[in-house]
Image (cartoon, rainbow, N blue to C red):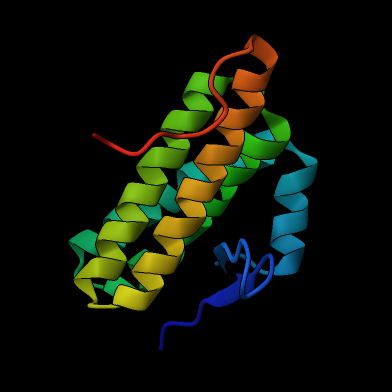
Length: 142
């Protein structure tokens, strides 16, 4: 059975970004304290996700990919030491997790995760562009 914790940030009528949690509180706390631990969790979880996917174990693959995604999010948002590499890790883990969820035909979870990933990227863009004086919002595709 696939178990994912869904956390609602914001209000139901305002900015109601959905975040999915794959790591327990204690593991999340550990990776928040150390970028090397977060990097190790990302690497191991990403490898496990791909292995489980190859073995035809999609639920285990999603849990591992979600752990990689959370670790990548922590590296991107809290530690922020290698911006390009952190962004690459985050997008790789997000794409893998989204692809796996879509394969299980979980459209609501896929939508929520995609919204959370976009919100994370938007926040990072805004923070980086504020420092350079560039545009502050993602513009819709023309």
